[in-house]
Image (cartoon, rainbow, N blue to C red; front, side, top):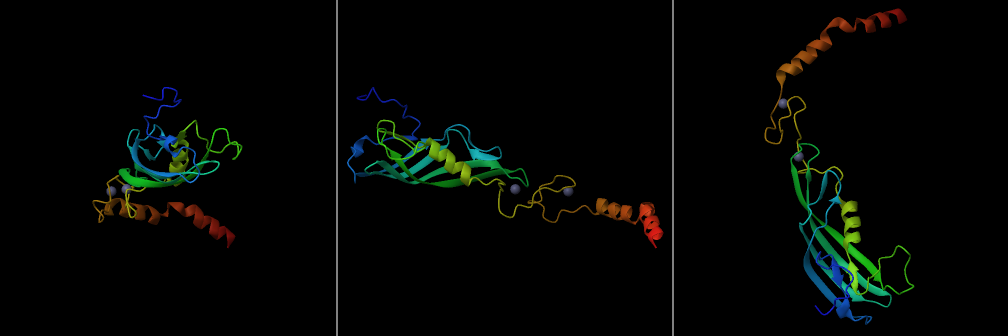
Length: 190
Ligand SMILES: [Zn+2]
Ligand SMILES: [Zn+2]
């Protein structure tokens, strides 16, 4: 449109244009929008499905050194329960509070977030926030009963599930006097 010089693709929705703040310290705007989740956002057992909605609710505030972004990004999570291997469906609210330093400003460290022209890229922040907040042992629910170690049945649907026969045979094995080596050893000590 009127800005063919814009360097970044803003279609991902995670790149916000701060142009309207006009670099007037004190100017403020709010952003409430839905972006698409980028690929590979998460860890092996749980993550944000690529292309799923990322709800952004942010306040962008122009300050002397740059633009301060505060608010939240709400993402969907899909994963696998570590106990029953069932699907884990959850959402995660990532807090965002970051100063995006103006490109030409001396303020901030080398690793500080920087604007690119008027554009502010939330993706690195979102990645850091999501990975920090992800459950490393995702559960479908707090009290998931997991799977039966004998047969793999889902104990959530069958809490009374038991295996009397294999249990009995284990006790039989313990009663069998085939660990007589222990007895011999203890006798030799006596
Ligand atoms: Zn589970
Ligand atoms: Zn079983």
